[in-house]
Image (cartoon, rainbow, N blue to C red; front, side, top):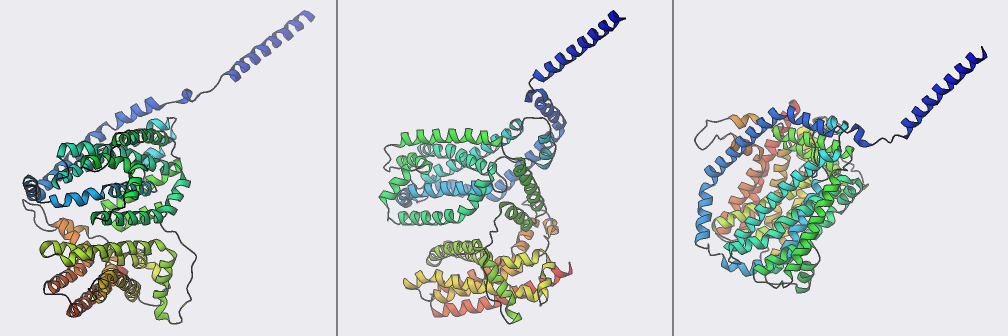
Length: 575
């Protein structure tokens, strides 16, 4: 019995020892990510399942390219033929060559800063690494490597940006040949460093902003300062074009960063002083290569929250664009980019209820100074374009006036954002003591008044140079623009039925043009009426009578647009 008991105890101890050794071996095994990696089979399965979808998408892309090519040939063939003929006869643009050559250092600085600003702002809501909702919700939750999913998106964005850069380089080479600064081949070779190296730099900046939320907050905060810097550089371009060059500043721009390194080959090819351009090109290529690989590494580490928010924003933007609800698409971008910084500022409340809308609009503008900044920028652009528009004759004068008036409309429209916010959801007007149409008409007061003040400021340089009548004419353009902006805010849902109206013809259907005319009725009426009046009066000499004619036309156009805005507001409430 003792022997049997001892054997049983030994057997039990042996089993326990074997079990302990097995557990120890399991504990000693090191788990690696490759044990659960299913990247290859998952992507293989997706490629197999998406094969039919990819074929259909390629067919759709081919149809789209064919349609674009057909439209380009049908509508742009005459312009292209005329342009090529102008190239063949040199188009008599040789006199511009010297002026343009002087602007190259500051012009490249403007273009590079603008490209960086666009890339950084784009990364606030989209960025170079974009995935759709199903990919974010399903694929990235599987045991797959994120790099295998996200980095191809970055490479696709890089390929698209390089294609755009090469197209811009081709355009720049054509321009340099037309103005007789350099032969086409030499100009194309000189533009290639900028075309190939600046897009990867912008793409890497976008990837960095997309990956790091703290950097995104810094971009929002620094955007106004970048806009001011752009304005200053644009002023330097204008001074250089007129012959007032700043040699020390241009030298600093040529050697202070990629903006100048990209400019040096073009400056050398056009006969300027850039003896160290090979060194600049080598520096540019090295920085661009490092930036591309840095962005390629960042692409695999974009947080899931960032990707999820961008997927939702892209879906909202695509939905808005497909239904032609451009306001909805714009709101989706604004909300995703955080473009509504609010400051805690106050104004004393008015005692009269008739001033309550004016008080609220002024308070909204003070709390969102970015709108005031946009209005100032558009006003400055309109003032700059007004000089050539008033001084030229014929078609060039009309185009100059249209450009100046459009800038003025955009300036006043930036001040009319409270009207658009009110009409986005008519239920928000429950606070108002007025009917909805009266409320919308009151929203035109602040844009008209502040737009008139901007017009006075824009006219001051022209008044000092001998055209004091512009102090009356420019402010008179603000009320029609304010009425047009309010009418646009009350426009209501997109009339997509207009896209299919009219009979088809060999040159196409009129539906898209009808929709565009409906969508832009306000600015078309305001800008068209003022352009006809100003062009006809300026042709017979400007003076005090000009202000009287413009005042009459402005009053008529404003009354008409406000009447249409009231009718549209009534329909909007009924919907």
